[in-house]
Each structure stands twice: as structure tokens, then as C-alpha cells.
Length: 186
Length: 337
Image (cartoon, rainbow over the protein chains, first blue to last red):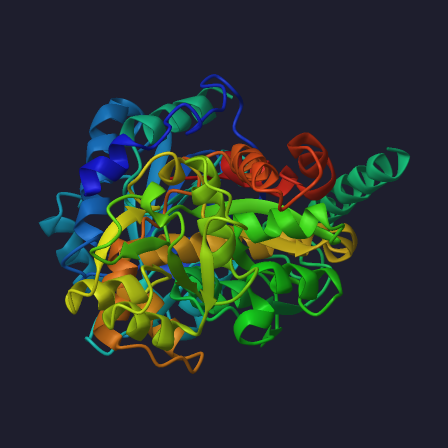
């Protein structure tokens, strides 16, 4: 049934925008000042000059978060030497009560993301709630013990402007890679 | 034309001023805040519209603080729902495309802003009905005249050459009674909205003749769309865009975690069988709002309904007057899947 439905999707309508078109400018990227996995303070404005991909995850998420992180690992690989000096990934926890810097450090290592150029951030519940709200991310503790949340990855250009967001985890990593390249070329 | 140009200039001016000033009063905001913090959504009883219920927290994140659900039952959905919205009874909400088209044909002051998902309806027939054409001269139970169910089946009947006004004997009954009538063989067909189809399948009542999620051409066009009061959109273009974004994100949440959608729906006070509700949310193809064309959807249903004699105006006139894809076009650039 799923296959039938997918086959019936008129793909011509999908992503009908010009591949070479400049990414829109949504507005100024919402500010944050949080704590990294090694305990350092990470402030968005300190990352100016780099293209950023900001995602939201939590370390005990065993189903969907690793899918997202795996896609980001693949994009990191494709970015090669640009990753780190010119492109930075920022993964912000949606479960600050559990995800201490040490927990995030272990998560990063387990996911193959414990590298220069990739920060895993946490903060007080209030700090995190403000960041979630400003980026438009839904997150709520579930009765099942995890955190129900919306997967939203935001690409921010070198001058700190929010340019595009990716909803969910089904996105094409190739498309995100191309968008990051576009921002690097600007 | 001049008014529209002025409105566009006003939006750009607001956006520009906000950017210069560090985005209004809240320097963390990426975009200008909504022009109003109050939003009233049409309270439609179908679980199909779960994205707008699950979007409540997302609406708060978009800057709405006074969120309410207005209307109930038939009054909030179908053609009456379009009328209620036109009269200012609600600001925005999800509804089936076809009754929205009928509303536009009657001059309703609403604007269609985008599509959310395809596939809600399933038509079940008794042993006396083997195909849609077999409905000629048969009894079909639907919720009410001009309900989403009635309008959809009228469109289907027209597409196979039947005259829905002459060839079908309509039985207007609430869902519980309609399902019972089908089970007892007292009607020949029943058009269900989730979670009715899930219940009928489980109880092996009737057999499915058509699913709008699977069967062409119905599966090619949006079922539920987002519409809003036209004046409200005109006065609050940023709020309209933010509300649309919240509902589309709600659709993604329903796709990735159907249980969230079920909980949000039940929190509205509806009492379906929870397992049927879960199954319905798992089956509905949420999260594909970028994949279908909302304008083609309006044109498709306008053509079917005109054939059925249910509307008078040509599709292009309704599209010109009653659709506003500007926010959707922006979101399609800003929000990828």
C-alpha cells in the first residue's frame, strides 16, 4: 500500500524550485548561548564566519535521532576539508535534564560525530526551552520516557542569517550538502 | 491590484524593519512576530485534521498566545465550515478541498492557503455493489447534505457518469447510524472518514470500493487543505504564514509519530476507539505537503463539482478569487523535507 502511494506521488511538483536558486533569507538566526560537550560555552555569534547546520536531538533517542545523526555524518564526510574550518554542525539536546556534557560526549563518540567542527550543546531547561521556541521546534517529554520532538535542521549562513530549514529526517543529504555548498560560495 | 501591491509593500516593510531592529521587540526572533496573538481554529471532528490539533505548541512557538478551537461537528467542517469561516466564526483551519470549493463558488470570503495531505475517505459497499457505477439507484449513507462525505461521493459519482442528484438515494445519518445501516444491509454503501474505515475493516462490514489515499485520480490531489478567513489573512499576512507553517509542521509530527496526533485529537474531547484512531493516523499519508499541487486540487474538484451541477463558476475564477499561495510558496523555499 505504501509503495502504491509513493508511486502515485506527482514528483514533478516536489521541490520545483530552481536547483541553482539562491537560498531565501528567512531572517536573523535566533541567538543561543549554551554549554558544549566539553563544558565550554558556545555562543551563536561566536560562530559567525562559518556556515552552520543546527539540529535538535537527545542522547537516549534510539529510533530517529541516530538516523538524523547518520545523515549528518555522511554530509560531514562529503564536505571534506571544509568541515570544521568553514562548516560547523551544532546538535542541541531537547532533553537537558538528562543530557549533560558528559552524556553528549559519549553520544557523539558512539555516533561517529566526536570530531572537530561538531558541537553538542546542552543548557538549563529554561535555556533549552527558549532555543526550541525561537527555532520553532516542538519538544515534550513523553509518557514512554523519551522526548517527542520535531526534527528540524536549520542552515545558517556566515553572517548569521537563517536561510533554510529541513523538516524531519527523510531529507536528501545530497540536497543539504548542495545547500551548504551554496552558502559557502556566497 | 493597487491594494494587493500596497499589501505586499507593507509585508516587505515589516520584514525589513524587523531585520534592522534585530527583529522587533524580541531579538531572538528570526522573523517578524505575528500581527495578532489570537487565533481561532475551526474545530472539525475528523481525526484527519490531527495536524492542526498537534500544532498547538507549534502555534505558541510562532507567537500565538490565545489559541482556541471554535465550532463543533458539522458546523465546523464541510460547506457549513467554509461558511462559518467566511462569516468570521473562525480564523483558520483544515477542511476537505471540495466543500471549500463550493464555499468559494457561493462567494465565501475565505482564502485557501495550502494543502496538507491526500487520502481520508474510504467508500464501503454491500455485496450488492461491486463498483462505483453500481451505485446507480442504490442507497448511500453519508453524514449530512453538503458534508465533506456527501460532496466527495458526489464528485466520485459524477466521474463515472452518474448524476449524484438523481441516481443516488442519499441517506443522511451520523456515522454510528450509517455504519450500523451498512452492517444490517439497510443501505448499499457508506462513505467513511477516519477512523470509520478502520472500524469497518476490523469488523469486516462491507468491502472497500475506493480509498482516496490509493485510488487515482483521487489520490493525486489534496484531501485536507488549510483555509482562512480572507480578511484575517489580509490583515495578518505574517500570522497566516506562521499558522500555516505550524500546521504543516504538525503534519510532519503526525507522520513521524502518529501517537502524538492521536493524543492531540483525543485531548479535544473526541472519543473514538483509540486503536482505530492510531491505525488511522498510521495510514494517513502525512508529511507530503510539498509533493502535491494545491492549485491543481482546486481545479480538479471545481471541474468535478461543476459536472455535478454543484457549482456554477469556472475553476480559474475560483482559483483567482479564493486562493493565496504566497505564504506556501515562501514556506516551500524555506522549509524543505
